[in-house]
Length: 385
Image (tube, rainbow, N blue to C red; front, top):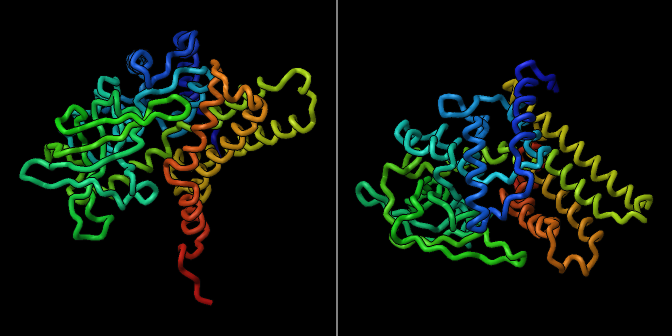
């Protein structure tokens, strides 16, 4: 693993560090899934765009900085260390945009990329359905080809930010006569289209970031198909690959969370050997995860094939985070867990339950590790002896 910074990378690190120190708001922004919070985060995204930091990894011809994987990792680390606001248009910048760059026509790139980068248009993702979560290919939302249009009927669920979204990138089934992976189409759908109905999913942590999205004879122009009709599965796998490289779960992020947890330890227990041991173990896990991530970054930077460790990241960080937040709840105690307050650790705790499921459940991820990384037989099969 070779990760010595070049002069250009050190200069970029200093540039982003200085800009963040001068521009990060002194007070936290409101919850981004409230009307006021959404507008505040949108203005912050536009400041990042004007400074050239909206999506540093995008190619320069599409408005990015053309940064290599290591420079991109530097940006995310500095962003987290500066305690900058939570990013708003993550799905547009991290998934829809890169998918368009890789698979879109020139007309599609011209139509959407600049507005994604500037956050003039906010995007959500329409993959999960009530009967299609980890088994995404079982989706039932239908897309009926009708001349120059596709008529969409069905339902998506757990759609983050749908209440504020201008567009949704979605998978629909356009051919039910072929194997389930082969009859899927990748669509860009205007959320203002007639026939779209949103229903907020109220959560026990009083967060309304998720919605159910219902499509009732929604007309989508055929020109909004990414790739070819019935080739959406391959496009979607590419999109999910961009998700793994989005930099949303860095070691710096978990180090910041651990710092908040340490601040919960009462003064009289700062010398408790059991607590110190647990904090130390979490610090070790975070550092090990950092090196795992750096190894993958090094391989990407050198154009090498990704090693087996690249399959492990999601299981590692999600389960480490869950244990850390369970520790935080122990420190808070039962009474504090039920009270309102400014500390966001209670909400983070409940969100860790979801992190074990989204982006592929950890059970599915373990199957991927066993089959693709370790070469073990597929589930339900046995190896001849």
